[in-house]
Amino acid sequence: MADWQNNRVFPGALIGLGLALAGLFVAQGLAGVRNGPSVVTVRGVSERDVVADLATWTIATQANGSDLAIVQGKADADADAVRKFLSANGFTAEEIQPRGSSVNQYFDNSRGQLNITIRQRFLARTTNIERMQKAFANQAEMIRQGVALDSDMGGVSYSFTKLNDVKPEMIAEATKSAREAAGQFARDSDTRVGGIRQATQGLFSITGRDGETGMGTDTPYQKVRVVTTVEFKLD
Image 1 (cartoon, rainbow, N blue to C red):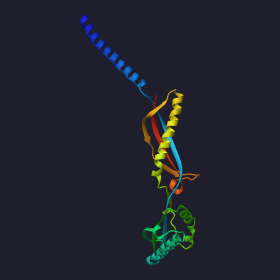
Image 2 (cartoon, helix red, strand yellow):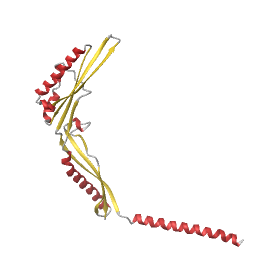
Image 3 (tube, rainbow, N blue to C red):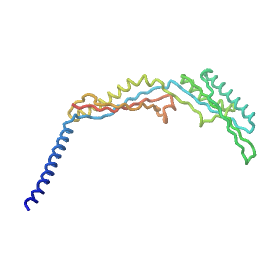
Image 4 (cartoon, rainbow, N blue to C red):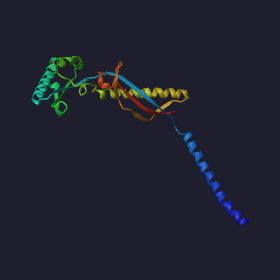
């Protein structure tokens, strides 16, 4: 009977010892976490108002009819009217580029006739933003000359091409902003901000400003923004 009890006590003792050691290791691990370096993760923001330095306008036209020769003649007249309109608004020949055309035709059984549509696209490109704004505002002149503009396929796009010129300063500003935020945390916790442990630069975004909505490319008046995430050591 004693041997049987001793056989049960010995394995039980081993299990108890194992649990005790496991508890010791866990306690040491938690102590290591508590004694590890204190850090704070904050975000810094930098914003800058800019004006686009490149404007492109895709002008789309369409001519319709039932006779291909007549429709083609109308399309040629439209192309001539677009070039004359842009030239009158200060665009050079190099700033006006044809961007292809397409022909679509189908037979309308209900009317018993062939329907033909010729679509054309032209690209006006300039660094003169005021010139583009003026021309776009006066596009009704082309409509008065009988040009059918397809607004679904065209529009002006404004671009800020000097982003690389402002990136270094904006990243520095965002990092400074993050350090100021970390400083507030440090004061609240009676510590000091140390060096950067790691940092992540967010994407640069360009949006409209001054109440403009939609994508930044819809207006020449734009706002560049970047957000950085920085982890600082607290001493």
